[in-house]
Length: 145
Image: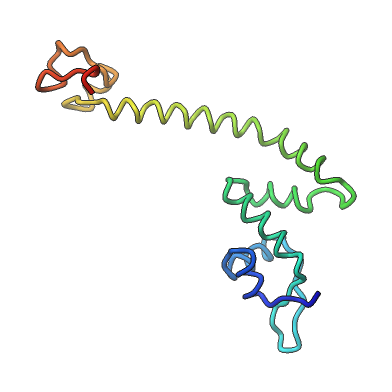
């Protein structure tokens, strides 16, 4: 198959040309060949590699994680072993991220129910003061929300 210019690679991979240059500089892509006019040209298989990089970035993998996955181990290491090594290292980080996100979600959900007059009341009453304290206004209660 014929090499592709950077614009066509970007279009097929769904990323900007500047991202391709960035991934080159970061060592995630090998240096491209040059056309007779000096333009970057890539083998067609680089499109799939860029799709993997794009998906990994969208999911929150760092460039270092992607570098290890793509070329951080010997070339004869099968992809399944690469994924296993990355998973063993990343799963504790993801568990912590989920824990923090869950705590934030609970706090924000409490905030949706909050009718406190001041932030001090939020702290004092944990954003859920009894209705009898008059902090809910117009006789409202959590149950009526």
